Length: 146
Ligand code: RB5
Image 1 (tube, rainbow, N blue to C red):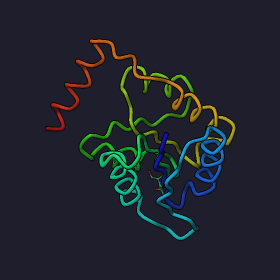
Image 2 (cartoon, rainbow, N blue to C red):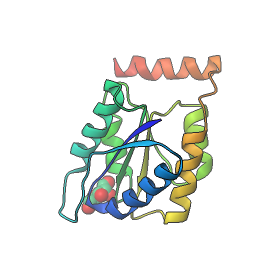
Image 3 (tube, protein in one colour):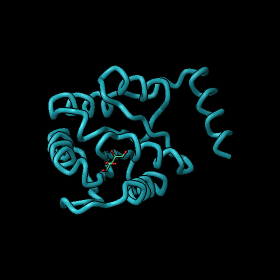
Image 4 (tube, helix red, strand yellow):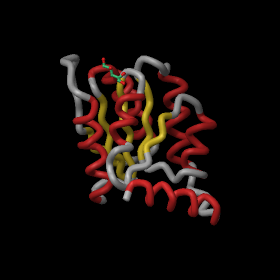
């Protein structure tokens, strides 16, 4: 699976840790940055990651900022993106099973490395249930977008 990943300056260390998990899982990774401590604007990072997802270059995306809040809000403004901010494993699983989330957001100033690793593993391992009721609700989200 190809994963696009990006963070602002608030989560560069977490991005490096998440990339290690992705490598362990055998995922192909496209890292759009940022790569240093200089401040960048999280909407720009969300735009780059989500472009890879909506354009088909990546199957799914992972976006990170200090809290995960700003970058998840930005990602969810992009047509075709269902971004889930997950700070626990249960939410990560549900975001896949029920919401078919195609982008995961996490906060570098919120999560420790251990929980973040488990969240990423659960999110990647969980399939969308495909149930009629969840498809119907996602279709309504898409209708709101349009
Ligand atoms: C950057 O200082 C910080 O605002 C950002 O990383 C994020 O937490 C915003 O939601």
